[in-house]
Image 1 (cartoon, rainbow, N blue to C red):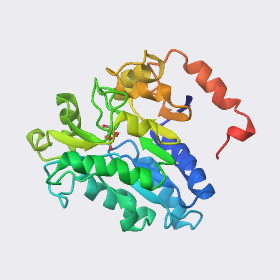
Image 2: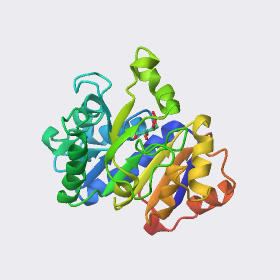
Image 3: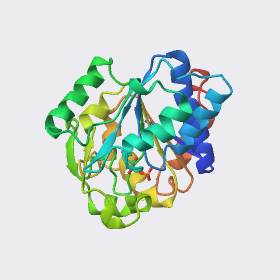
Image 4: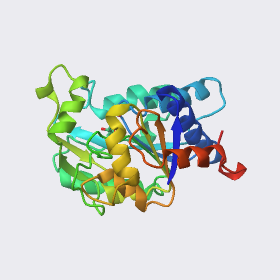
Length: 261
Ligand code: F6R
């Protein structure tokens, strides 16, 4: 795992955005796994800046969202379908028909979840999956004790996750109780993972995912099983890491072939 520690959240967005941009520049038809929430917003901002200045295009790319709430209308402003349209598809200029979000309103949710994994496979798999991490260690909405082998499926949101996401809703009880999320097994099949985290509230989760034991109790620790995972974090999110000096040294002395900026 490559750990990149940067001074602040703005740098996290800029550098992680540069990483995604380098992948899309090398493969304009790239299939991108799209996270929602606060963490990846800096990435999307950096990518939108490059699109605006005409140095990058997503018109040939495809996207698959990580997850979606179950039980809120698609046109609700906080459904991930709405968020992806507003924060990703429109500013980056994706062709809307080339971006999918799990269908949290399907009559047969289990069948829709299976079909989502099939659609990812039919698209040739995900080239790069963008990830945030929950304060309880979840990635996607794979809450603690999710199987490392799990596929896209329905999950019950942990109380901590509902509490953390209440800021997006008018009141805490409006946060849906269930979601459809890519599984940890699905996420691990992406060819590359880029996880971003900012702020002290993520420090414990980051430390447990990066340096703790592999455990379904910390779903983010699944990253340790992936051969190409990059974790881009600010100083505050890095504050629980024991080997931060080594990660800084490694990044400062990275060979040319490892540079993407
Ligand atoms: C979002 C997702 C979640 C978030 C995580 C962190 O699609 O799958 O895992 O990345 O809950 O959320 P933020 O970034 O809002 O702190």
